[in-house]
Amino acid sequence: MVSKAEIVIIGGGISGCAIAYNLAKKGMKNIVLLEKEYISSGATGRCGAGIRQQWATEMNCQVAKLSREFFETAEEKLGYDHDIEFKQKGYLILAATEEEDVQSKKNVALQNSLGIDSRYISLEDARELVPILNTKDFISATFCKDDGHLNPWHTTLAFAKASERLGVKIYTHTEVKGIDHKNGEIFGVETNRGYIQTNQVVNAAGGHAQVIGDMVGIELPVYSERHQILVTEPVAPILDPMIISFSKDIYCQQVPHGAFIMGRGGENEPRDLRNTCSWDFLEKMTETALSILPNLKKTRVLRQWSGMYNISPDKQPIYGDVPGMKGFFLAVGFSGHGFMFGPATGLLMAEFILGEKTTLPIDKLHITRFEKGELMWEASVV
Ligand code: FAD
Image (cartoon, rainbow, N blue to C red; front, side, top):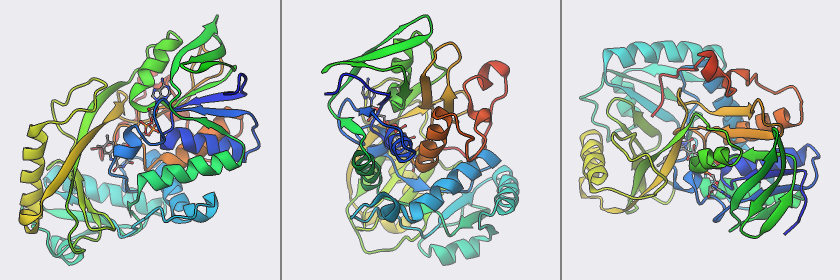
């Protein structure tokens, strides 16, 4: 392992790998990425990998759009010789309450003003898109044909491999145990495999972001919460778009090889760092899924798993530096949408770290927003 680095990125999920790639692409040398397990072992490899530009805030619409544009030609850009399986067959958002219906109309107006091709549709239109959909509990829907889902493993590996070709040193099974710092300055990181001298550290540690914050004596305003998801046996293709209902608490997709993958926000999930599973999730998830997609009644569940949402007070990411700790950067707090933000996170963070003008203004996502009371509330979160 190298003993010196220009910058050390902690975390081999989509965020860390995309930041490493963008920094290297911009010419930074001696970049090191440390991952305590293996690439995508955190939330990234456990997520639904749904991609949607249908958000209620301008910031999220733009970040998601920037990422969607990248995903469309990611294999080519990253020189990856596998398919990242971007199934771009749309995302259908179902409104079950008057409030959601009103919000949907507002969202579509905002999205269209930003060049996102979403539309407010009737339940009849929704059934045309998804003939197996039971719409009895819903009022309306919105749909964006450019949204969809992809394979999080291939996508993250594509970033990791492209980074390595640009000279980034990636060390897996290498855990950061401490950060050497004094008087607001960083001098190095201590790992289970030795010490690396550096003045710059990126915290892209997902569910462990607060543990890394503690290493420099900073209590980050984030916590981690378990979120579960399940996969069924593969069946013939019957669901094109990804579907979601916020108030019914379900998102669901059929992946290219035929399996259904579905998850929920979930209440009363533990806020610890364990990737455990519950029987309660399986019962509630299948019950909700069958109320919306009754045709799945005979489809068998193969397994369920969990991952961590890392959650900030407004459920939005925290991008940027940290006052009082020179060279310490944050890409944390993504809640349930850090995967779809991945390419934008990589670009915006690399620009910020290098002191460039960022492609999108990210000052609203800076950590100082919490003490200023300028939270970035977003209505369309899971
Ligand atoms: P992670 O992928 O968690 O990566 C952090 C990495 O840091 C981990 O691999 C971890 O091992 C490593 N690490 C931690 N501590 C250390 C240390 N001390 N030393 C070295 N390495 C360390 N997002 C979407 O956009 N769409 C979805 O449909 C979606 N569905 C989801 C479903 C579920 C069930 C879950 C749990 C999440 C979902 N998300 C979704 C959210 C998304 O998965 C995350 O926001 C995103 O993957 C975060 O990526 P990351 O790289 O920041 O963190």
